[in-house]
Image (cartoon, rainbow, N blue to C red):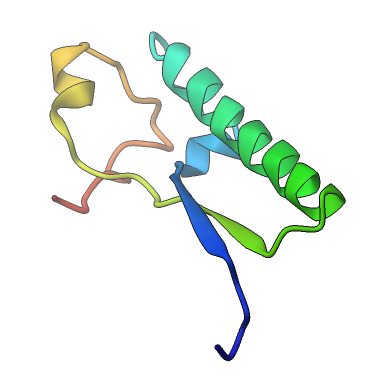
Length: 88
């Protein structure tokens, strides 16, 4: 084994786990993603402390055009308009 790793944990996060966007009416989403960021970092520290060879990664994609904005009637700020052009 080249890296001699015992495992790899991958958290799917979001850029809003690292900054707080101006999304009125969407306070739960950034809060939950900041929790994923904190969980990833504290788990990373614990894995180092107990000297495991388990790696941890937090993937934080940018804005994605989903039904969440429309369904929840979220009003995007002017700087966020047009930032969700990536479609899934």
